[in-house]
Length: 397
Image 1 (cartoon, rainbow, N blue to C red):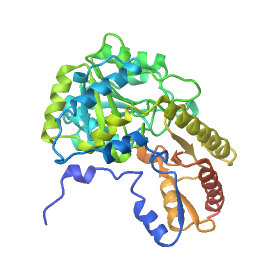
Image 2: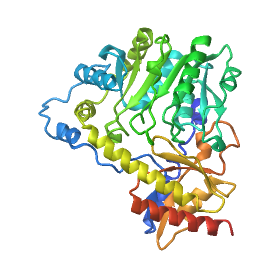
Image 3: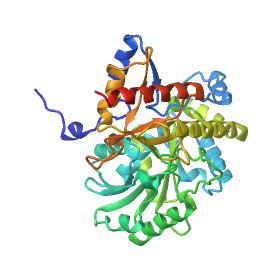
Image 4: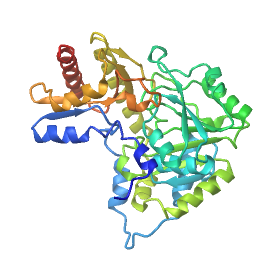
């Protein structure tokens, strides 16, 4: 029998999606599931984006340019200018989601065996992207006691080797909701300049910043245009996960020319997705004001309720719509599966994402879960009630 590749064997399962077979069985068993496991917003997609697709008069659904529609890229450049980021349409390549952008970028700036330093916990698919491209992730551990703040920059610097080519951050962070301060961004920029590294920022949650805090983009760091790259997406910003449209932004022309070769190999990003995404740029600020108000209320409620459960420790997110909760258990993977397979409260249960899959260091995060507060407050309240009841029973088993 032909054998599977080493890379295929090493490709990790998604900690977010690997429990789906148990969820599907729970649904067949008649259970109601409150999904706290996945960052699928319940916020309505802007009507202007939906209308653009519904009202399009396309007769031939043709390829777009490999780097994305020119009109879309020009409007994207204007979007960034509104956020005080000066780029042109030539600094942007449209990708099939942020995921494709990161895979193309890893393939463009890192050779197999090269190293990228990432503070953990981090978005689980970073491990999948690194595995797919043969890149080694070097983690810097952040702690829930410090609310997952950037460790001392010396912790980063002592990990740099001759194989280190890049530092990757997610700002605001998935799965922690951590928002980097201007001082932290400046320190990372100085380190990238000192060692001539790429500084890559996944900024897909840029709009979701709370408590009057401000988002600071790496593209605004002075003097290191050749080092800085941003990965972005419409998925969460406009609640358009299914559009599968993202982009890569950099003033480094060599990086963009290299990424474009990979983009040409996959031909083009989706046409309808770009139509919807271009129209979504017309979304008024009032939409984001309402969304931020809603997520702030959800976050405050979630933190308040979880802190009342004995033995639970919470990270307090300043952005995005996730938090890490440390539970009074030893194995969150087992607990998450038990919630779906065995437990219910009046026919209802919850689905969570075990946090160990967001770490690359073995043995860390085993008693943590990631919660996505993408349910309305009524559902969120019921989900936390179920989680509290489940924990009380689980600890007696």
